[in-house]
Length: 224
Image (cartoon, rainbow, N blue to C red; front, side, top):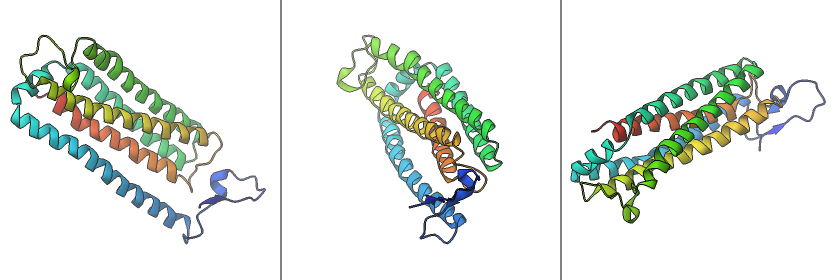
């Protein structure tokens, strides 16, 4: 396990960081961690890939239901959330750059901004989409009771919609937890120019969240 030097030096924690004993140096440890995380991200792609496959199969079988379901979404909320996540990816990238330059306060401001954008995304999703839709019966599967449905397969559309967007929202929450952890550790100067592996990995995860939404937005909101 990686450790921090127990030296009584006045150097910040990132400057006293020592790689795990099975690595020759910090650069080798960083590359190994980053490669391992990229492999993990491929499993995330497989997860959403299953949802996308279901989407395309059912859209081919029931195009009328997909057209009607998409028409019941407000593209403005989807577009707004797209802008929010793009801004959050920018602030996350800036925070990594600031850590590399040992600009701790600026990094913390950008991490806080990223958390704000993540919370804003979830608020828009819950307050303007999930709660209003459930209140009028636009629910998945057997819970569906929207009285103005034209297609008999509209419940299937909402099943795919909620699976895709809810799993994505769960990833947003997980990403925010990781960002909050990084923010807390930056207050203790755990990360700096020679040690920022966790910051980089958290950024990769957050960019994946953004990328998945860029696919979900047109597939769900713009097909009608």
